[in-house]
Image 1 (cartoon, helix red, strand yellow):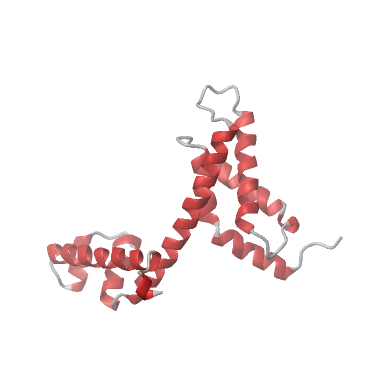
Image 2 (tube, rainbow, N blue to C red):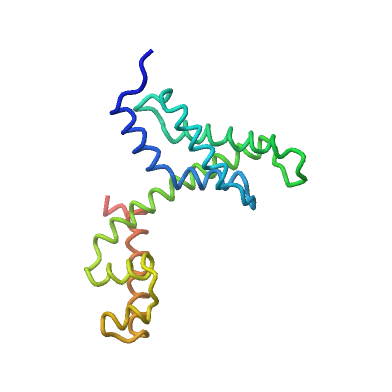
Length: 179
């Protein structure tokens, strides 16, 4: 049997990258309060890559990757069996897994809606949001940079966040007239 093609590898890496935040959220939900969830997520990523040749393009990547991640969580728990931490039954873990899969889908939809709404903002509104949440400076620094008062920037930021929230809700829950 031949190994995966470069095209398969490229598509696989794109899928893994696309689902990374959902995968981490999934693992963390199966390990509430456990500081090693990030390590287990990394182990899951390593195992997913090890098995990448087994993945059939066109099938449900997320379900496949989540199944591998769940087994990594179970393996971690087996290794930690002597630890007196809270352990959930498999039935409860299945419920968590289903709930988190739905939550991660919602998260992905929200991220797509946010991207679309950010694109719809005026240039100065988008710059304010990006500066506030993706840059390391303070609001006062940004206010000085654009020649406005800090309080004026706060008011504008509040309005833009409300605008984004309304836009996201409309994208996620369109009225029948918008369909």
